[in-house]
Length: 86
Image 1: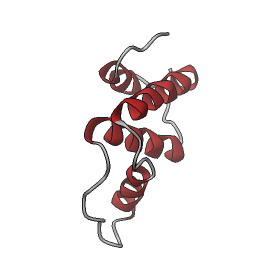
Image 2 (image 1 turned 90 degrees about the vertical axis):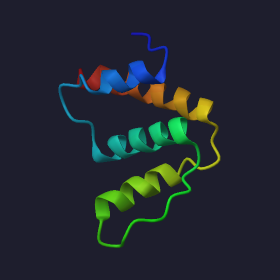
Image 3 (image 1 turned 135 degrees about the vertical axis):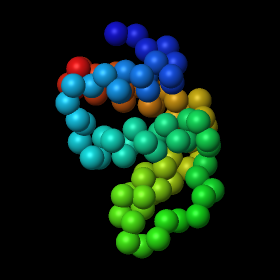
């Protein structure tokens, strides 16, 4: 399977028949946000919104990575996960 762009990769994740681990989902989120928006410059969510905080931190983990590098990493991760979840 060859994925050529971010949109194809995103669409493929919506076809997964089983759910990836929370760790993989957070990594997908962080890479996607970095690839589409660049560094996370948003305000940290409130302390009791654990899901939003986890997503915020995941995106923050990729700070400084170029959009192109984040996109390539996202596509590679989706390709890897597709072999397990399709």
